[in-house]
Length: 326
Image 1 (cartoon, rainbow, N blue to C red):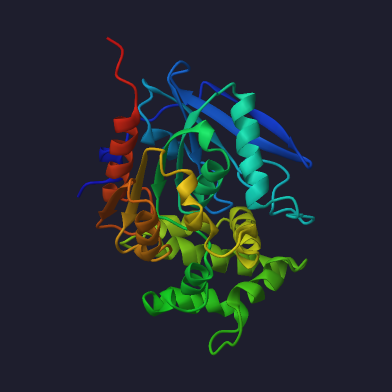
Image 2: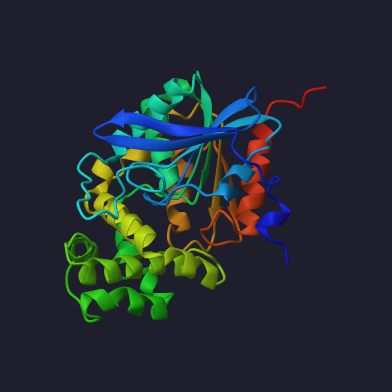
């Protein structure tokens, strides 16, 4: 059976890394890999709160790209971390992150770059491109998510639970199980930010393992185990929940409504037909508003590491890469 390893570029180590002070007491971890003279590209991770991992470097040809990856506010190796007892996410919003991308671009001496993002990363990539279209050469987007209320309700207020009932039951345990009346995201917010570790830790793990269990077409115990790490789970869950209860600090449908600002930018949209976390209807709505984008609907779930999705993402970056040196 084919795996993502069969289609990704070879593993590569960073040639530079550091911390960037973006204000508000926030220090962001960044790294660069590939060819320092290559085409600039920035990898925008998902979550929000997921952080970057070595495998993400492999979507780009290291001989032709200069790839910049970074951990968004309060997650990964950035500080302060959202798992801390005094976690304050008041300066962590979509628009803070859009500003961080611009600060990172300027700090790294990049004039324009390709923006690559999946899941929440697709939302942040769209928000950034719509705010700064002159800084974007191309967009490579995967598992489209735009924070519309229908998207959030599908995944956290019952719809997706009909397809994965066993993991939905686990998700509901911190809320006392079913039946439940009210907004589950709001109820989880109270649990995740409760100061008592006996309250916020189980809630964090339940939130993140629901996602890990439902983001691949075939169940992956490895993903669930990785997402069960208490510090990672709490930061991931807190940041996601913080964004979702605030609708990303955007008006309903904003990212799709404002796509006219970026329709001139070459783009590839890769979407799994059986994506449970970010159903294909959102990618379809985006493509209808942006018919110039190259839309690839593949037999897969949500994860970028599913072979069909990984193959399309690598094909997209290869297509946009400069010609190899003679």
